[in-house]
Amino acid sequence: MTLVLIGLVGGVITGLSPCVLPVLPVVFLGGGAGSAAEPDAESARRRPYLVVLGLTLSFAVFTLLGSWILASLHLPDDAIRWAGLVLLVLVGLGLLVPPLGHLLERPFYRFPQRLSGTGGSGFVLGIALGAVFVPCAGPVLAAITVAGATDHIGLRTIGLTLGFAVGTAIPLLAFALAGRSLTQRLGTFRRHQGAFRAVSGVVMIVLAVALTFNLSDIIQRDIPNYTQAVGNSLEKGAAAPAAGASVTLQACQTAALYGGSGIENCGAAPAFKGIQQWFNTPGDKPVSLASLKGKVVIVDFWAYSCINCQRELPHVEAWYKDYAADGLEVVGVQTPEYAFEHVPSNVEAGAARLGLTFPIALDNSYGTWNAYDNQSWPAAYLIDATGKIRHVSIGEGDYPQEEQIIRQLLLAAHPGITLPAATDVPDLTPDDPDQTPETYLGAEEEQGYSGLGSYVTGQFTPLTHLDRNTFDLGGAWTIGQQSITAGKDAGISLAFHAADVYLDVGGTGTLTVSTGGATKVIRVSGPPDIYTVATEQPAQDGTVTIRLSPGLAAYSFTFG
Image (cartoon, rainbow, N blue to C red):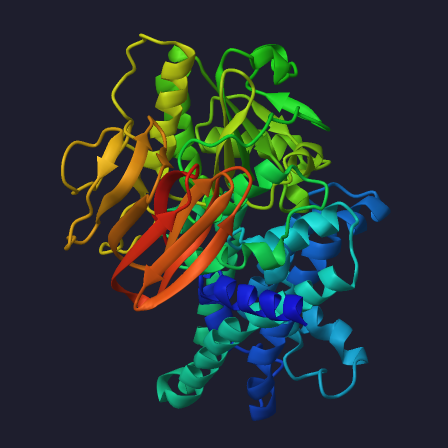
């Protein structure tokens, strides 16, 4: 039941996200533009429901079972998408040419009277849209897609899929009903139903052409994903890490969900596994991670039709171009979301449209995806020159932090080199302008310290008042480059504006947290991980004071 609810919420988020914008005009017009074969009021009443039913049903089935269906029928991997595009054009032509519309609806004449003659073309339209509908790659959809593509389908996945389908249907149905309501209320539409159907048909054909040539991606890329933050909160419930995954890598992936926590030690990077084909390498020959020892490597998981990825990849490409001469390598692991993303020529063309020049690995069997226990598109793993993962980034945003870590790893690998200026690629990720920015505690990147005296190892005296977005220390602290280590009576206070505050801390001991008149004790053990130290709903100003037991190392504060 929990997974069904997670799927439901994830579906609603997808249905409200900017990724649905290309199909919304067709859903809106399709909900109100009946064919010549369905002129009565009952047909008009049912049509929006049939459009959305066809869309959500076909999308859910093709997402979960698409790879299996194509393999069983020995069809090309992009056959479903092309069939949907052809069907979408036919439906559009059916609205323009009534005899063709009658022909399309003829298969429904065999159905019971409730469907026959009452919106059959609406159901066909929905099926076509479902076959070509490519939404944002949220964590719920990622879990469904990977489960279906790797034949790991069980009751949990089916429940998640059903919840997602129903959730997506809710906002789309609202748009379809709005289209029907408009055509019924405005006399102009009633008097010119034929012309309205013709316009709707043209819009459907235009959408099919736009999808064929990937023109709709431009719209989706240029509009920030305003549902990203909500979608990320579903990650742990929808796509929990595998039982055998590295504990340290799990900790870094969890930290990444809350904005990351600087340079970490996430364990040795897994080797590339199950790669079907390589692009952008000399002779398109394979690349091994072992051969890249001595270089700083970004392993970036993406899919060419994933809109989130399309907004993230320009940053990765800019880093590759600017830092390759200084020892940076990028390997883009294209792990398909949809069946058509298995096709090498589609991937190669998609990479060319995005202007990607770094090596690309086609991970059709999900071998590398599973080796990293990855759960999201996009996701980046920053690997140092010794082959250890030092930072994980999930989703869009946090590009300045990622680039800063890349620069640090390059300087550590090649002391004394002169790096170029930081890149300047526009970031379309939405952000709360009042939220406290990530606050690093190590001397190398310290920001926001407003306490008494210099920020060096020794004894600190806490202040009685802090301004927003600042912190101070009390007691004994050892100030390192990337972290600060607690000594006797060590404490830290932070004034913030956020809904949630997380402290990235490692070691074994306790945190005694005081905020809003309440005190709680948090036990800490193991490698660096994030711990929730304050929660304010909704986001507001607050102050938190934390006493750390000796030996604990604190790295940064992050916020949500």
